[in-house]
Structure formats: C-alpha cells, structure tokens
Length: 226
Image 1 (cartoon, one colour):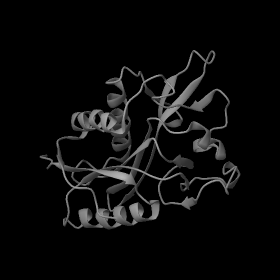
Image 2 (spheres, helix red, strand yellow):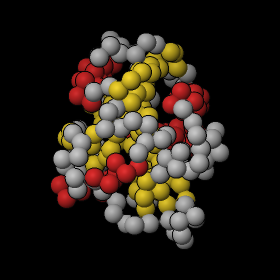
Image 3 (cartoon, one colour):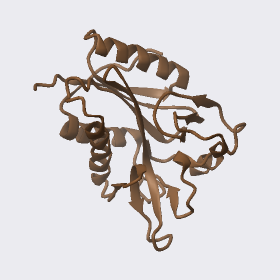
C-alpha cells in the first residue's frame, strides 16, 4: 500500500503540555476522519511529570517538584523537560496494517536507528518498555534507559509518542520512579551523560533520517501554532 508523506514539524521553545495534548487529540481525530495528513511533531516541554494509564501513586515520589499531568497514554510516570526531545507521533494505522505490536516495534527501531548514527548501541529489552544501553562502566549488569515510549491509539490513529534524553538534567528524574522500574541496576541516561554532545537540531536530523527508513518519507511543515 502506498503511504503518503508524513508531515514533520519542529517547535522552537517550550510547548505547554496541555496545549500539546489538545492539539494531538484534535489532529488524531482529523486524521481518522481523513481530513488531515499524518504528522510527527518534535518539541521540548518545560519541566513536568506525566502519569500514564498504568501509573502507581507510590512512584510519584516528589509531587510538589514539578507540575504533574495524568494522561491517557500507556505506561507509568515519566519526566519531560529541557534538553529532552519529545516526538509526538500521529500515524494512521488503518493505512499501516492495524498492528499495534508492529507499530511499537517500529518506534523502537526508529529510536535505535537514530542513535546508531551517533555510534550509540541501543536496543529494546524484554519486559521493559523503551530503549536501553548497557553501562559496564557502572558495573556488571547495569543498563540505562535513554528513550521512553508511551502511545495511545484512538480509531487506529496514534498519538503521544517518544522522548529522547539529549542533555536533560538527569536529577529531575529523581522525583519519580521512571516507568515504575526501581531496580538499582536500571537507571536513566542521556547522550550527554554518555559523553556525546549533540544539539536538539542535530538530534532531529538523525531522527528524521531514521523515521524515513522505518515509516516512510516525510514533508517538512511549520510547527503548530500553540
């Protein structure tokens, strides 16, 4: 089946979380109705925590630290903030086979392929959502998550998406149990923490190339007006 170009938008500055969610819900409904093209929206949020549909109250360790938003995506608590690139993915899975498992694997492949361009060997882990890197420098069996995934499907259109740690303040993750994983050997990292200095623009370039390899061609458009 022929897939049309997916619109690719990048926002400058911090995008408020409620406004981003409102836009995604409206756009996803328009895509499902055949009134809008698919879209990937790359952006940055101010510091905040979000809780997915599986979030446990005990995993929100410091609820006063940053604003907390309950959201309809899958997963548990996660952090968004400066230095982290968020990619909201609004794709029509009716046109792509209606296979949710394949779609999530595609998101993982997208992230893994982008990070490989920075010589980062990342991979998926059975039973642990997201994309991980081994950390032998920390000790035997240590692994860190470098990218999170949390999506929702409505009428077979996806929204929410991925978050890649480029150079955030990793101490901000201390206010939650990230994705509900409390095992000390499983932490959080970033490109900067791995000694790889990349700008958000350089990160976007790598992710655009990898997206086209996994999901098909894109067309650059202006960012949504929020």
